[in-house]
Length: 291
Ligand code: NAD
Image (tube, rainbow, N blue to C red; front, side, top):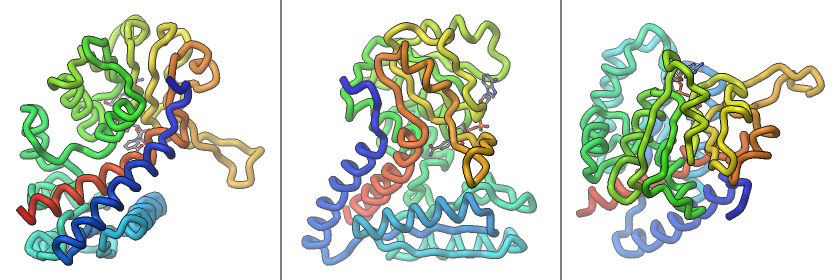
């Protein structure tokens, strides 16, 4: 097995696979999948993610529809946009870029995205189906983690997976995926109130960090030979760089690299996989809607 689990490589292999599928679907139906992205406000990080999603759409032949709304938009105006996208036949996936401005309630708006077009996999109905092991849209970042495990043929059956972080978009859905038949892992979730966390992480065959605390996971918290997946994306000050910061994960990469049998880097690990799996869900929705 490769020691560095290269997310960029897996991202490109997923996009290549989808390009072939979309071209076949277009030949058969004359249509191609469509993804609508709704961006509220001018948060630079959100603008960056929306631009990355648009680039991926273009690369693989997915139509992308952008709806950019001012930060002052009212909830009813935003809801009207979502409802029109739910009805739009050209749109297979609707994505609401988070975070929303404080004046808007993300849960209330996310619940209004049609579960059939919920390619982010955030709708409670889809989250429930995921837990039940039913076919559904899987939340993209944990789905990306699973794709990396699959790609590198990392055996999860009967293995102890420890996930640090219990968020609704990473920790919880990842646990729901890895306990299903097929992955068959034994999963433990740690969070901010967990006691003696290092004892638990040291028991992990596969350790996933999804916390948002720079380099929280140090070498003494990792078992020799463990597989380490770092979901974290954190900026830390670095005056030696022109931009004044660098991006690091939740894992102290250099020291953990010595102990791990395999590890995802940051950047270049899980980050891009979220977009790859968003594209996968959009193509799945297109197929479902053809059926
Ligand atoms: P979140 O803030 O919603 O959740 C963080 C979780 O970490 C919480 O469940 C909390 O209980 C736990 N936690 C906090 N401090 C802890 C500590 N000291 N010890 C143990 N647990 C602790 O974050 P999130 O949205 O799940 O994101 C986590 C990280 O993953 C962030 O760095 C985020 O930027 C990154 N992320 C990356 C992608 C991607 O790669 N595309 C997508 C989503 C999130």
